[in-house]
Length: 256
Image 1 (spheres, rainbow, N blue to C red):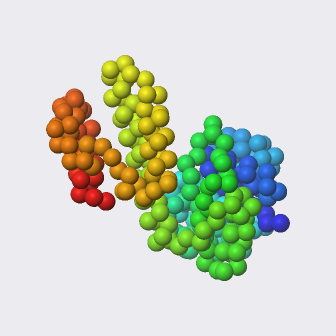
Image 2: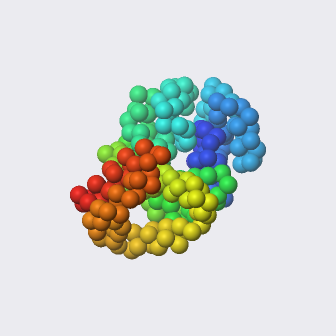
Image 3: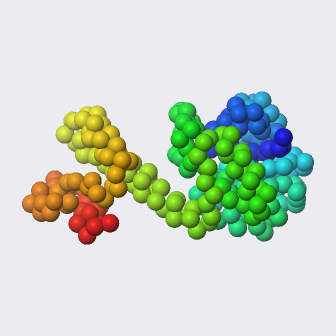
């Protein structure tokens, strides 16, 4: 059984650590630059923990770096040489695997494509795992491990993953931002956000069952200039929302 060192103590680390433990792949050690967070996760996983990089388990087989994208290179540099034989992977969608190459001979990516919140339990059977590594042997290990955690495993290289991450930002982050704006617009007239819930659910259902471009609706899709003008007047107190309305409407009118 691989000796796993989980590096990080944020949302991804918490969920991956628990899932690995539940599937009979216990984490041997938790490392985090924040000792209190390392202790909390280590105790939750009933395993060793430390707030010092130098305490890393020297016989580790797999370093699973679940840290912020902008910290991956720095953390890898701190651990370099301490576990020279280990496979090092990060969990980022936007960061190339090669960021680990200067520090480890064996490196790769173990990317769960999902947004994680501590208060929500992931539905692991639906989460795609995108894996890649420098050697065929390590790819096989990551694919086998991912298949135990979930059921949807994909071999995705750096270029594909970067494109995937951009698409995910549009589908997740930008869509949620629009939900937030919609909620604020309703609140200005004392209307509950739940009024939009059925519409949001139906929109997503249609987008999942069809090409989203084929089921686009609304004033921009039908060329209703008068309605769009009225909407822009209603948004006069929010110039940034007006600009966003114009840009998205133009994109819809021009076609994806």
